[in-house]
Image (cartoon, rainbow, N blue to C red):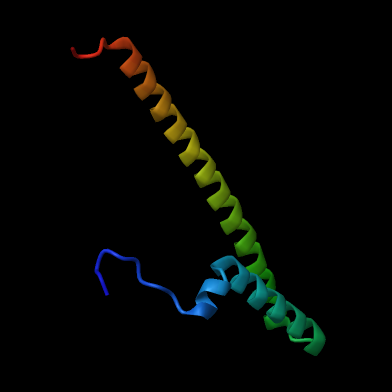
Length: 88
């Protein structure tokens, strides 16, 4: 394998994202705890789902600020290139 090529993940890992796995485990823990009446499973299922909501919110906000900063950089570079005369 060429060291410059990205390493391929096994197919189960490609199908399930981190968020999907966390959501499935949180729902399973919450549901099994509710079915069996185990408060610890209900607690951890709730904590996992709340953490997942926070994770998705933070990632979305980070990506939004990342794209905004890239847009500002692109605009500043384009205005900088327009102000300088081209070399002859």
